[in-house]
Structures are given as C-alpha cells and as structure tokens.
Amino acid sequence: MREHLVLIGNGMAGVRLVEEILERDPERYDITIIGKECYPNYNRIMLSNVLQNKMTVDEIITNPYTWYEENNITLINEDPAVGVDTANKIVTSEKGLKIPYDKLVFATGSHPFILPIPGSQKDGVVAFRTIDDTAEMMEAAGKHKKAVVIGGGLLGLEAAAGLKEQGMDVTVIHVMPTLMERQLDASAGYLLQRALEDRGIKVMVKANTK
Image (cartoon, rainbow, N blue to C red; front, side, top):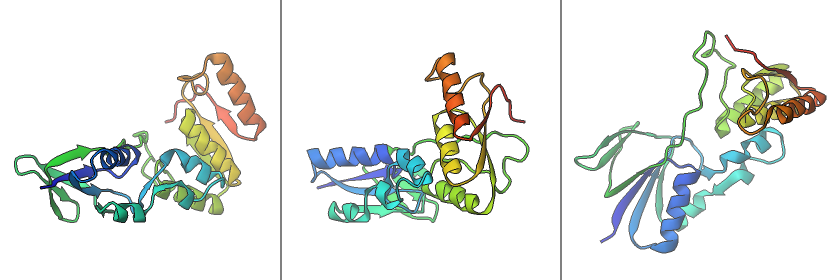
C-alpha cells in the first residue's frame, strides 16, 4: 500500500525533493503539495530577470501544471497550511481542508524581512520575493517615477537594476559602508558602487533607514 507524502511548500527545494523521490521510487508515495501562491513551481532566482524584462513569467516556470498531472501529484494552491495535528497526522489548510499524511515535509522557505519602522506597512512598500511582488513593482514603475531600495545586498541591487530598467529614478540605501559587504571587500564594494552610479542609480551607504 502506498504511503501518503504531504509537502508543505511548493518552492524550489521541496519540489526538487519530490523529483528525487519520483526518480528513485515512483511507486512509493501518493503525493500532495500545498502552496501559498497561485502558480506552479518556479525559479525564484530568475525574478530579477523578469523585472529587467529579460524573461517572462512563463519562462521561469520549472514545473508546469502538466508535470503535476503526469506524476499524479495533487497540488493545492492558494491555500497555505495553517496547522498540523501530529498525533493524528493531519494538516489543516487556511480554507479548512483536512489532509491526512504518513510522511510530512516542511519546505516553506523564508519570509522577506521588511524593517519594522514607521510607514513600512503603507501602500507602495513591497518586498521582492514572489511573482506577485515583481508584478506589483512593474505596475508601480508604470505609474510612478521614483523608487527607493532599502538594502545594498545582491537581491536589493538586482531590484534596483530592474526598477532602473523599468524607467524609474532609483536610490539604494545601505546601512553598511560598502555594498554587498558579505561577498565583496571594501575596494570591490566601492567599485561596484561606482559602476551602479555610472548606470544612473543613486547609492547612499552608511545610511540607517528610519
């Protein structure tokens, strides 16, 4: 008798796990995947290319809906898990579904961090993690002229480059003395800042957002 495997999280790591299971023992599990977003699995790393008009959303989909169907995977989208009863082995979704399991995998990824400062919950403040975030940024670029990116790490700079490509006047605010300080030494960070400024992106370092 096949066991029921439930995966909470429809992202890259969790779906890669399912791919490995299917390659090694495709008859072992009935599989259900629970996701918060309304899309099939996609490559989150490529969102910056979507923002920069280098790729479309369709091009970053790694496992289309047909893949789930071909592998007899039940996909529950737009209905995140909100509770797990470990005694009875049941997952409860936000919409009230009760999903029993034999094996349960958590692969929910992370939540984007937005500074807990005054104004951070206002309209126009957005994280950069999902397709919907990217779409919101592109829509804003069509209506507004100026953008501020808080954070001069890799993701922040990708967002800044994308918004500049969308035609916005972009300023990057970074709390550290140089950009991408986790990856680059001070000299390389300075050269990166100069390169961004040459592309028309304003950069403020040692700037603590209030």
